[in-house]
Amino acid sequence: MMTNLHAPTVDAVVDQWCQLMRALHAWRPGQPRPWFDSHVTLPQLKAVGLLAARPSGVSGRELASLLAVGPSAVTPLVDRLVEHGWARREEDRADRRITRLFITQEGQALLERMVAGQRELIASALHQLDADELATVERAFALVREGVRRATATPTEPQTSGTACADTARSGAADAVITERISQA
Image (cartoon, rainbow, N blue to C red; front, top):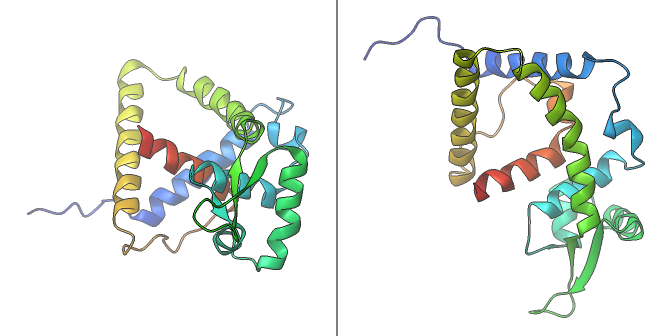
């Protein structure tokens, strides 16, 4: 088997992704940005994204673990989510001592507003490509989806590389939603 001496590394590809995200954020100054027009905090958005990815709901303890915070820190966060109408509490059917948290239609709409602006930006950039280039991008996205499918099917694989960027660090909620949507595809 012949190996490509110039094959990109995972870190190099992640760096390219980070550059793309920075370019998208810098492009079209003055365009409405749902992130800035909303009164949602990043921890709230992460929690709503995690709820969206789990249709069976999560307990407060599970949410605290997923967010890497203590149970006492998640209580006021959940209170705000419920006050805003982005989440609802329900008694666990199997164990009435446990309260499960679910995303609401308003919470789902919040996530969709956050994604809508990015969709328009990406569509504008893709309109600049010819048919062959667009086919290459489509194939690349299919490969990334396959990578996500494999990563979620085999949790023993390393989940991160040594490269990080601010754009990917902010995307925890979106990651949860994207993973859930990919599994539904």
